[in-house]
Amino acid sequence: MKLVIENLSKNFDKKCVLKNINFTFESGKIYGLLGRNGAGKTTFFNCLNEDLKCDSGEFYLSDGKSNKKIESSDIGYVLSTPVVPEFLTGREFLKYFIDINKDNIKD
Image (cartoon, rainbow, N blue to C red; front, side, top):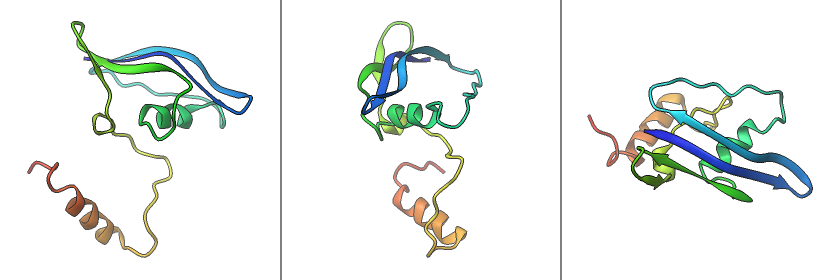
């Protein structure tokens, strides 16, 4: 299985942040995206997760025979600065997260 990115672009007004990004991420390999602040790393993941609308391009999962449009449930990533509600303890937050996702959690 591969994650394929084709011609992904994103602009904010006249500022081009992502310009025709093309890449294939192969299953079983570990990748790291490096870049200075403002290089577009977070924008890339926000587009991939559909938290931001892309201006152009597409991304999909490919098994070599067919392509599957990515859904947000296909993606998991850890933010560098996690957002935890201040009114909950860590334990309460985990319990809350487990409760709202209990139908999707196996074992």
